[in-house]
Length: 115
Ligand code: FES
Image (cartoon, rainbow, N blue to C red):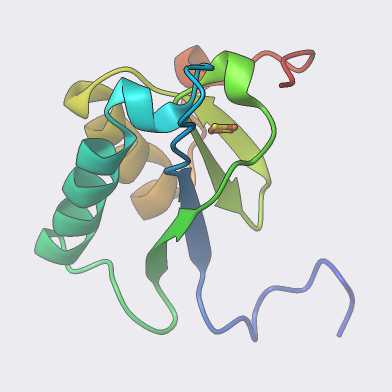
């Protein structure tokens, strides 16, 4: 098995949502409805029968250190970073990327966006 061989992965795809909340007033994903997006994604993945071993896992994450592009979610194994806005965006990520493996180009976090 090589590092890129994902045939034996427990999950086919893994999406992590930053849910970080900053108490000092600095911008954070929690201030941009990240929790609601996470909840929506989890429910959609389940509704579409995509959740479980060999399929898709939706997970919470702390700060992913790309806050300037927030709210942020990242999909592995492709390591594709998304800056989403609303439920329509999450729906598209689920339908296109998580279900079919097609990256949603319009939602990609610009490569130079960091903290
Ligand atoms: S607070 Fe979400 S990436 Fe840092």
